[in-house]
Structure formats: C-alpha cells, structure tokens
Length: 274
Ligand SMILES: [Zn+2]
Image 1 (cartoon, helix red, strand yellow):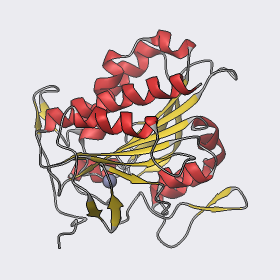
Image 2: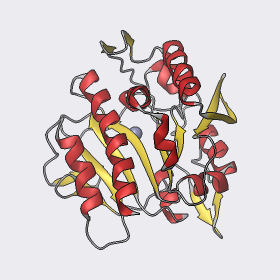
Image 3: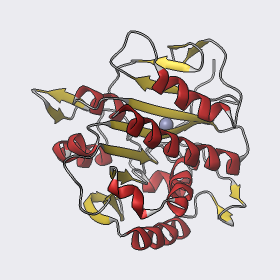
Image 4: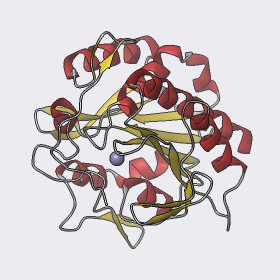
C-alpha cells in the first residue's frame, strides 16, 4: 500500500522550458508574456504566501458563449499541470475568445510548487474542504488558505465554469494515466472517453481496479463527489468536470505535452457540446 508523502520533494528538468520544474520565477515570467500577448485580464483573488493567487480571463466575456475554467497547480509536486498550461497558452490564438469565455487558474499552490511538495507551506492540502451550503461555498477545518480564497470567490468561479471545469493534477505514484470525470449521465459519455483518450495518446491507461479507494474502469473514475475543488464546481452547476491525472513516473516534458493537449481537447469538446 503506497501513499503520498505531502512533504516529499519532486523536481524534474524540462527541456521544453530549459529549467527545473519548480523554477517559479521562470514560470511567472513566461506566464506574464502570454498574458500580455493574449490580452488576458488579471484578477488577484488573494495572496498565497508571498505570491498572488491570480485568475486570468479572456477579455470581453460574452453572455452567448460557453464559459470554461481550467485550473492547475493545486498540488506542488504535480508540476506538469502549470507548465502544461503555459505550453497551451503559447499555442493559443486570441481568436478563440470569439467562441468561448476562458478563465484560468494557472498555479493555485505556489508555495508548494516552489518546494516541489504536495501541500502548501502551511502544511495544508489545497484541494480539500470545498463545501456547498445553500448554493454557496463553505469552508471546514480542512480548508487551506488557498481554498478559503477560492471559496470567497465562489460566485465568480461558478459563473466562470458554467459549461465546464478542467483541473490538471498528476499522480507521482503512477506509470499510467487516468481521469476523474463528471457528467449528468449514469455512465461516462463521449466527453469523458475523448478526454481519457487524449491522455492515452501519451501514456498507458491505468488498468481497472482501485486508485485512492476509488473504482477505476477504462481509465475513468466517474462521478466521484468528494470535497475537492472540481466536485465543488460541479455541485454548483458546471455542466461537465474533469480532473486529469498524468503519471509522475513518466518523462516530465511528455507530461507537459499531455496537459497542454487535454486543455485543447477539453475546449474542443465543450464547444462541440453546444
Ligand atoms: Zn493532485
């Protein structure tokens, strides 16, 4: 039985970005370049340690377009999510904003990212303690500092994820890939299977069984409602939700490319559902 050590440090070298995976100053510098190029609006939701917890949104959000939220970097050792978002942004053309309202949380747990460890520097898990009460966000004793900031903006995040939430995680214990997905169905539909298959182009898909006590079938853990951020937004009404899990035992740059690819597929699939 293996489990994740919240303070074990994991770092990798990226040849794509020519730096270490926990190089936070390079990360923020590259992000700033893309935010400027794409004209994204920056909104500081609060402070996570000495770093701002920023939400970025496509300019001039339109009421007739689907609203999608993509988040990454909840767990500090899952570094290919944030770098994958940078890779995705590098390839993005601003014309896409004529079709969707895009919101991004590129790095929710900067203090964990910098140390290469799972929890934040206060020893809290940023992806727990997201409760819903009377249609509003509510914290509990497990809610992290970052989680409280996100909960304070639950109406904004609810609107931003109305047509879908994708959150990019990694599993450092795995050689195989899998997803958590949420759809208003009894079984995973085309949407879930297509997102799984995108990761399957990069890595073997996890065999059927249990991961973290959740049943995995065909690489999908389906409609598993816990107190995570993604389950929270689905409870608040997001049409679909996906939490991607790339395998931390595989090559780092491959994981970056897989994260970038699933962001692209997620957007295409949500547009196709409209
Ligand atoms: Zn995670």
